[in-house]
Length: 207
Image 1 (cartoon, rainbow, N blue to C red):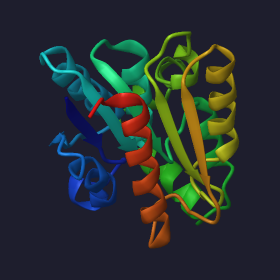
Image 2: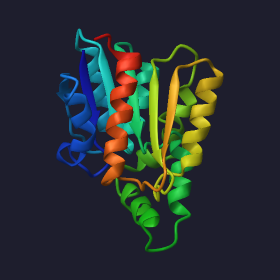
Image 3: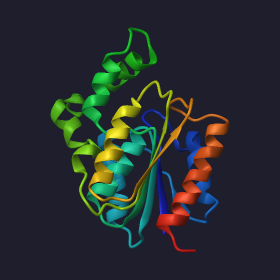
Image 4: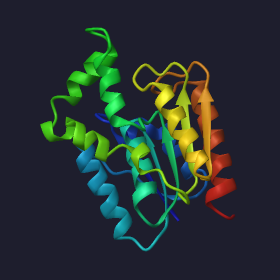
């Protein structure tokens, strides 16, 4: 069993030690690929999983969390998926960012995303790469972790994903962390570590 851990847009593996740490503590082999944009990230994860003989725990933060959820819905060899602060409806996400006040972090993030390949911000591409559109019964177990003060990803879209996945009979947990923003800090990191370890012991690996 290996773990694929995916950073967010514009981030790096070094900035998500809080996510790799709990997985390393379980003696899993960790792979932390880098990527340029959503399409590149999704391609790399698909390639890594399809070319391996192992099963994977796939975990990600922000855009990386979205990629993890897509992998769980579309690929074999995914034992379970963990998404922290990850958008589940990418079209709704772009609209949410656009609605931010000029100069706000929401609007600035929207402007950064608009600088990438134009085909990746079309309505068709965003819908085609939205995890909520791939929900079906019998998905691998999924853990969603989201802060109530996330300034970049509205928790309501994550709650909608959770409710729909659960209604289809999937094993899914949603951990709402009171006061956490988009990127965890301090005590949030300890809560996340405990949630991940508990989830993996319960659903992903038999120790």
